Length: 427
Ligand code: HEM
Image 1 (cartoon, helix red, strand yellow):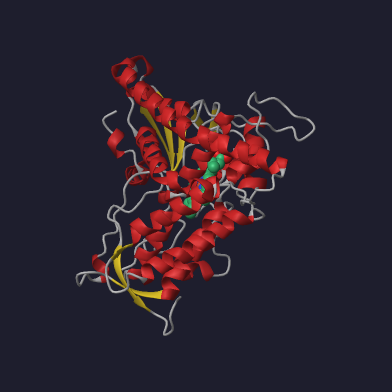
Image 2 (image 1 turned 90 degrees about the vertical axis):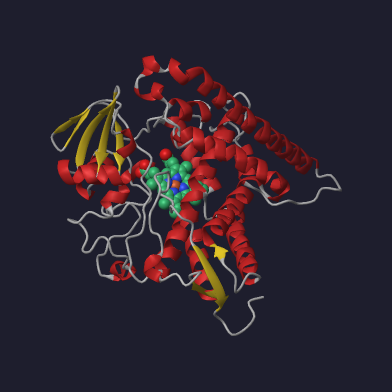
């Protein structure tokens, strides 16, 4: 228990140097296994993908996902498969033109904002987080509810704190009473705020759908958002409707899935854009930061000759794997050209030296959408402006420390001064 503070991506990478790519820890009554090399990741995510296809959930995660009514924490099985199918074919799909259009429009509006600030310091971390919030919020709820964004961001911030809060009951269940009651009240308040917020949005969507069906003369066509896509499968009792499809989802599923999209799609993409910009501005390059992925668990099994107990939290340390000296030459150097070499590993999940989106059946379903936003944003920021560091800061003085979290975000947000790069007006 004394080591809990060190069990982050960096601390676990240090342990791997001493104990190897598979390292077993026991925290309270919980078994944890850290996976820190490409070979071990291949054994867990490829050879035994069917075994490690669940994710462990803390007390807070179970409660805030309406008892795993979402996709990210749903137990592997028919329900998860259905949720994933809805997301991949409907919600995150390339065919859902609205999501992709909102990426382009929001990036264009970001460039306009920066254009009006040319010559003065711009907090890149803050503006790209604003960008991905706008993209995801709009893709999820459409433009009909933009005005509630501030309230929704507050709800998300509280969810995020609760997801990360240390709760002794997760490690030693019989000590759960210590902060249990207070913690549970806070969880109930947070979920209550989300209910209040999304129930209204769902009701608005039901009305919108009814209006559409009535084909009222006054009806104005509004573009479909993710809630509209999900409403197609909505049934308050979760009953089957064989005439439409065999999939049906409740309000709780819609709420929990929307939160998956918010947590999966906002900080991940913003953090990747900010790290890329920071690396490009440095002249003493360091490696890019990969997110430590959410953990997996499964029944009793054996990996590389070692017994992994049932329900052990298996943490795939993508951060350490991407810096493994046995897999990479100069792992600590930011050298994008290495990916141009013949046979260089790609990031899609079959080369285990580099798995920023995970691998196997639980790998990231939002990869294409995330990459599109990231690539388009970085390309626009670099094409439209030259960037200089503020207050005479030298490129090798840029702070490259990270914080522990879902996406290993930058410890200090990146600030830089834009100037026009092109010799014609942008707008
Ligand atoms: C740069 C952007 C992104 C990165 C680096 C990233 C990374 C990841 C990783 C590492 C996982 C766990 C994979 C595993 O266990 O093997 C994951 C899962 C997931 N991601 Fe992403 N992600 C990104 C963007 C997105 C976006 C844009 C969305 C949604 C719009 C999204 C939604 C999800 C969901 C729902 C899961 C859980 C899937 C499941 O358990 O079946 N992600 N992501």
